[in-house]
Amino acid sequence: LLAHLANTVNPRDTISHIAVFGAGIMGGGIAQISAMAGYTVALWDMIDDALASGVQAIRKSLIRVAKKQNRPDNWVTDILARIQTTTDQLKAVESADMAIEAIVERLDIKQQLFAKLDKAAPPNCVFATNTSSLLVGDISRDVSDSRKQRFVALHFFNPVVMMQLVEIAYTDKTDKLLMDVLKSWCHSVGKMPVVCRDTPGFIVNRLLVPYNAEARALVERGDATIEDVDVAMRLGAGYPMGPFELSDMTGLDTGYHIAKGWYESAPGLKGNPLLKPTPQFEQMIKDGHLGRKTGRGFYTYDQ
Ligand code: 3HC
View 1: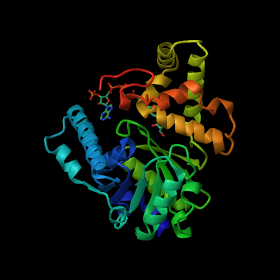
View 2: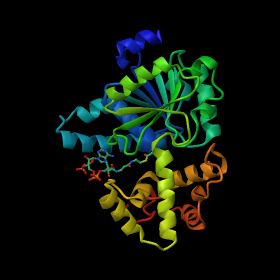
View 3: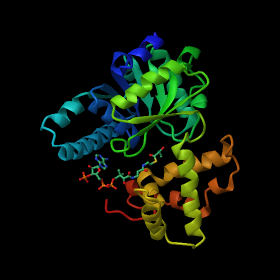
View 4: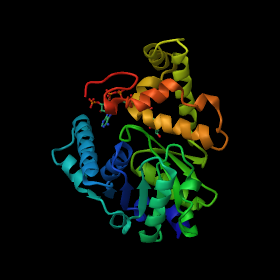
């Protein structure tokens, strides 16, 4: 069946309904681009408030896109109508062709979610994690062997609607023919896929996390200011944002947990002193200075 699907290379033959777990920045973005591409979406989160603010963020983003692209009045509402929300995990996945998880970056919680979904999802449903730092092999530990063949990472970037890349990471168990379907699916939602093995941070975060850590170390030593480091990387290296602006956008807590987790236990990275969160960085997290979302990170923002 998969050989046939890979040859047709039309992802819509296999995938039409997508379940997204987690209505935060990433999950909401994934739901948004899927619905924009014509897929129907079941968006799950734990509580109604999280779903309501997720949908509100999607609406705001769609309005921005509609304005830029001169879309007709009903464009936003038509896309939103393709997104159904639910707090029932089993209901979300029962008729899904693909389940994409973007919940909290905790291995045990992701493992529990997928073990539960495995029992309720159709046998052909593809399971994908949007993990930033954990291993797909670990996250898929408790699902059936047949599901492990259909288990990958689909790693998106923030802001999902703007960033063109998706990393597809596979394990030793992933059916390689599935990769063609997933690559076509990425193209169908307007993204460029790259493929990599299941290693911590895949490609982008493996390079970005040490880069951010080095930037923090440079400033903590007093070698340059935050502002000058950001200007330097924008104008000297051509990055759209410097490391501190970027950390404020993605959330300092995200970077903190990735670096700490890798320092404590990641294969090939454990004990790397660069990744050990410094007392200053720890303090920012304790004080709740997590970036744009809290109004203060390395910079301060009007809420
Ligand atoms: N929704 C819809 N449209 C958006 C948008 C959103 N959320 N964000 C930006 N846009 C569009 C709008 O059209 C906007 O124009 P508008 O203000 O008139 O509506 C246009 O983009 C330009 O936006 P801005 O003027 O705000 O700023 P920029 O031109 O700098 O673009 C950016 C914003 C695309 C975020 C750019 O700065 C960028 O590429 N930054 C780097 C982002 C990056 O590196 N992301 C990866 C982070 S790592 C990660 O995600 C991995 C994870 O695992 C941690």
